[in-house]
Image (cartoon, rainbow over all chains, first blue to last red; front, side, top):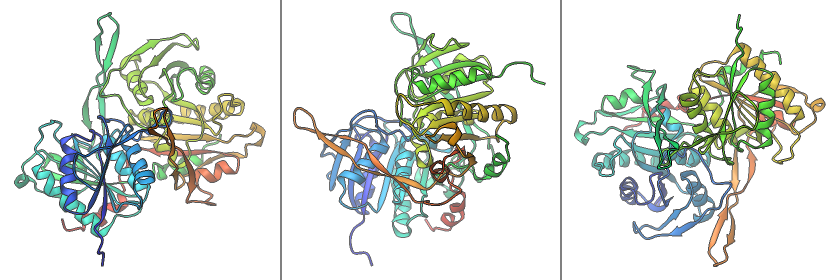
Length: 257
Length: 257
């Protein structure tokens, strides 16, 4: 029987002062001892970036009144690395990242700083979860998310996760009473159709904003995260970091080089 | 029968002036019409980062004497997005990234800007290859790489690649005559044991360099990229972007939330 409270590392990609991480810390405090190491500024879209051509800084802060809390100059993955290898004396029992302001369903997982932090936790063999709410607003209502986050984190603390697997949890933008349930799914095949928004600076030179339209190639497929979320379910995608296309090894091995 | 020369997009993560991309352009010129869109500065370790909280710039350059060439202020993935959606009139027949100065074997694939550019090509359903030489020196000898790159790129231009799959090619640091062959493998299970190098700035405050030791958990496994490279083979890992841990879906779906 475990007598010690679990040690929980909290990070995100929207920055240490975002309402989403405040919510996540609030829930995690009810489940264990919390250490926060999160970016000192928004780091959305950073994917699995790490800081190797530059230095990293951490600063002790006192925002959430938890065991230890630091802002970090780096990416979400840097935060996990520096927390595990420098700040924490023992490996955490759980890494949670988020709650992201906006969706990390489908192909977004690959661009997501939130999810990359969770994947880094899995690389370190720590049960890890990335949470996202399908609402990009700074004033998003996280009250339903709180209950969902607690249910899922409790299960993971109890049962652990298969080695090398973390969870990508997305929560639909509806009231708690309207959530139909929690569905374990696969990542939908989808893509962003980029529309580079070209503008002119005051000197007449072009610059661009990356923007786009989400295109789902798995429309109507009930085993996907996109379907679950469109139908008011919370989606959980078990997520791993072996990028090998195992099915293609034999085929390509036949080529004559 | 194809009469038109293939259109080849070249990018990298070491920056548009790195010797590795110069070598790649030189080889690709012998295979097709080349367009270069590459970062204006080193972008190693950027993973699948994209620029969404800031703007992007592209600048026409004249370094390699190819069809079109631009430096881009963004990440390697940004380069692919802006090339495909803004610069090129038609989809390229091939995206190549590299030649990276240093290894992208095993878990490095996930941190690698070079490989993320290739993965982005695959997301766009374009046959794509990331090339890396296991030599981080700016004076690395790319003469063996040239021959290897040409062999592999020719095959991919001829045969294409399975949908959603790109190639992660790593080349050992040996003479061409010492290369034992080309092996199609899986990504070895490995990790970086981080050792954060702590230093003091002139005002006495700490800062950190991310550094580490590569730990291979698949030692001696002959079907891995690490084994191939240690034994003087070129490694090819077919690489994909569905991060779903399919084997874990049923297990987690049984949980009671």
